[in-house]
Amino acid sequence: MSEAIPVTRAVDHGTAKLMPDVDRERAWLLTVDGAPQSYVDLDEPTYLEFEYARRLGYVLDTLAEEGLGLDVVHLGGGALTLPRYLAATRPGSRQDVVEADRGLLELVVEHLPLPEGSGVALHTADARAWLEAAPDDSADVLIADVFGGSRVPAHLTSLAYAREAERVLRPDGVYLANLADAAPFGFLRSQLANFAAVFEELALIAEPGVLRGRRFGNAVLVASHRPVDTAALARLTAADVFPARVEHGPALRDFIGAAHPVGDSDAVPSPEPPDGAFGIG
Image (tube, rainbow, N blue to C red; front, side, top):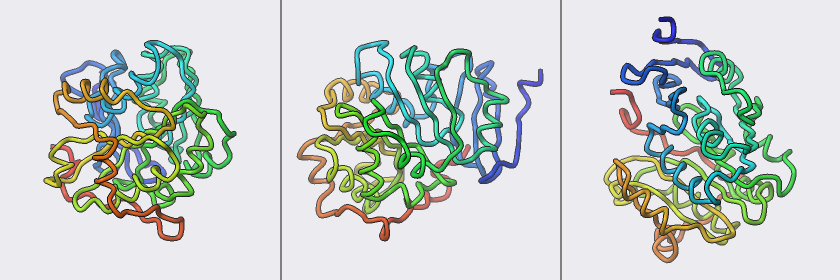
């Protein structure tokens, strides 16, 4: 079967590869330059393989009553894992996906097409530029999962970027981001400081080993003006195959410490992951 054959293609920002999962009939792993980007099961779009994707999914599940449609902006497309998840769990949602790599989007749409009537609109654009052109109060949720290779680009790590995100979100909207760092957490603390300067409520979801500085890893940032159901989130993340903690309130303020928001002129990309941090075994 042609579907079982890996697909490799040069895209705008590297070499993308789609590899079939031998254990799931229509499931695929997307890598770019060897770094895992997305995992999609076309037959089961609610299946989230990556831990950070499940944590984002838990937040999405707790934001509004079950099945209620939302207006969602995804910065970073990958294989459209979360747009597929939301189309399945919250039918009627209107979703915009912003992906800078046109070749990558074309590869994904060709080999892993979206279902009919998914309500997902695809845009080839720089995430910051698209956000700056978006109307005020136009999104319920904004999800940032943008990596140039394995690093978050610098222009998506500043206070000005956080202010743009807040402007585009509705007053009760929620910002989510997939970030990565290791002790002493200079990057992660600065990102929390950026969003603490703009939003009233913050939470951070990560594995205890990452938070204790034992290894490099992902952390999901949640920012909003309204309280998020951290108790429900804590239950869901603690019950995961790879349990995580939800930090918020005084503990998170202590974690931020003396970190300051970052201006555009001082912004830097997220740190380079150590060899093997996100590699394929």
